Image 1 (cartoon, rainbow, N blue to C red):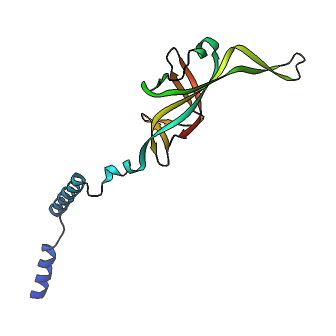
Image 2 (image 1 turned 45 degrees about the vertical axis):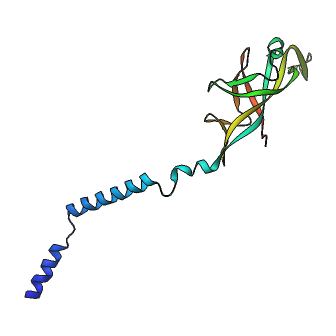
Image 3 (image 1 turned 60 degrees about the vertical axis):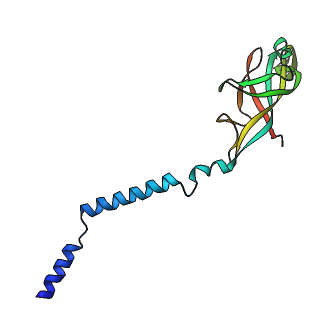
Length: 171
């Protein structure tokens, strides 16, 4: 009989209750807080290790620009991405070609290439500083720079939407 009472008393003493759960939760919270505060695993620096600052050369195509606007684009001009409002680069080269378009011929059965003397296609080569993130690409002030994307540029005398046709690292 005495043996039976000691077993029941031992079971009552080791029963898990709400107080034990609260104490355990408090201890785990304190340990997690200490780990986060002292940051032994350097979690905040993991992303930084995968990024680098790079100078890139980007070619942007501006199609069907009026000739007088095209003439105002000069080597050495600063370029601003309108969406971010920051100076992002400097024009290092400007190439111009006469704009042309395909139209239906007089007979209506063939396409004819027509040159438009009042408009030009301008290729501007821009040198700019970007952040490169491994596996994601180039970013300018958190805006990703991709070949094929439209970019709204503020040039010294006008704004224009161009298409990025080339990106390469200067290094």
